[in-house]
Image 1 (cartoon, rainbow, N blue to C red):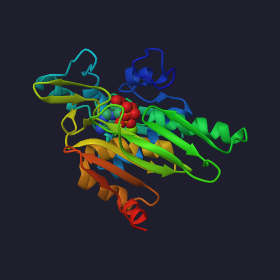
Image 2: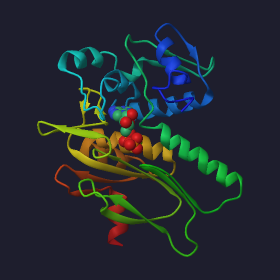
Image 3: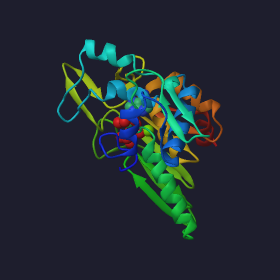
Image 4: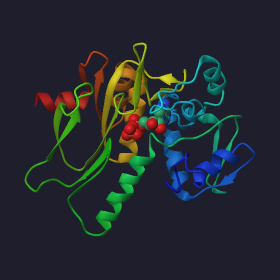
Length: 265
Ligand code: ADP
Ligand code: MG
């Protein structure tokens, strides 16, 4: 919160957002690490994952049912482009090369925190544990003789599961359109935005990703949600050790290739 919450004016990230357009700002190693990974997934997804979505994202308030109008969105979209984020490891700084650029790490920072927590447990000699932070979890070890069973929440039936999967030694993240949202005139305004439009991404109800690290599963679940079923699964199928389960707008489940193979064995 003190480092990466953009809404906390005292945080390092809020300071970067205030001063980044004026020139390079020295930021803690942790922020550089998370921003570096975010930029990696931006490149991999051709900008579907983009922490500069915040230029538009800052105009939404889901609790107050507030969304930006067309004029505000048009202006905000000019500030969205991950290529304007200049990360310099030698000087330990970040600068913003595009006017209006703002960063929000909400799609990746929780995964990073979970990985750090798991690393602490491992250093302390713990061999089996689950660290869960809302939609992002990492499972260390198994239950001795069998894997743990993890449920994927049903995107439209609270309290029910859409799928149950046995897991050991993996990270799992789900991005859904049912966590932070409001409905107006039949449109679902939710917290995962398509950086191209600045509006809520359509076509998917939830995207679940399995990966070795939670920073990866977190960023990728948001990425796959934006890319949609076809392009999302095509990306996952290119990444070794990464799997996905995507629920489309009709509620139908789609699996990545490795999961389909595992299922038929
Ligand atoms: P949660 O934080 O609820 O676990 P996600 O991992 O899917 O869910 O992250 C959603 C968050 O990601 C949003 O609240 C926002 O902070 C951020 N975000 C939204 N759209 C994008 C995007 N296109 N690229 C990167 N981050 C995004
Ligand atoms: Mg995420």
